[in-house]
Length: 279
Image 1 (cartoon, helix red, strand yellow):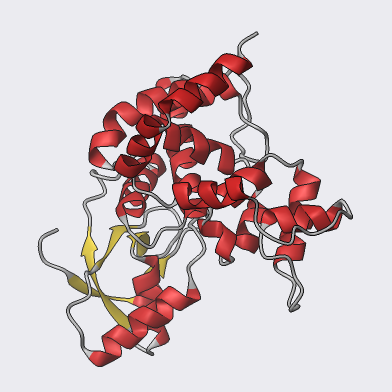
Image 2: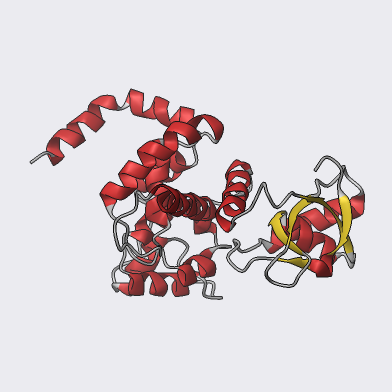
């Protein structure tokens, strides 16, 4: 796989379960290609065996759309040995690993990838709850999520920089139903852990209502989940963002090391809060 090969774009099948591509990122790549800035990394494919298409895309959905959007009929690709990615789970794990490292991945997409990895882990190791549906439209069991976060982060914390706390939050966010995730995937809240956790805590029908309000083409549309919930509950829209939400929003955007330093500085307050929750 050291030398890329030119293949026809029409010969590539893109799996339906891939994350939604960001049109803005596709346009950025197109502009960069037209300007001749640098060399685009080839996409990765594997020979198709069941669908009839010659190839199945593994990595590079945005690059593929950008090249196709420029009117090209061929693209450089690394063709992987089918033995290296013999199953859908192996291909999905490889895609997830690259996604988690990529800087432009939103909090929402990152959460979905971590949850998918957990499902693959459950299937491979039999650690899932008997009869548990493999759908984030069903609220996941907290204990299972915590156990997976423990096992996952031992390996992922070093390779991908993901802490146990981040995994647990991601699994909560990934419980948001697929239609709702798709509708908000390009909205600003898709990159706000605070908003997504608040949305995930709502019942599914209210999540759908929140998403509809946030994506309205209107100047007075709610700008965040708290405002949308206020509209649904017919309460007064908050004039200013609460202090705790400002801190939470800033915290969610910090790097893991900065989050750990924050916890260390506020350890006394955290211990007080934990003690108050004990029965």
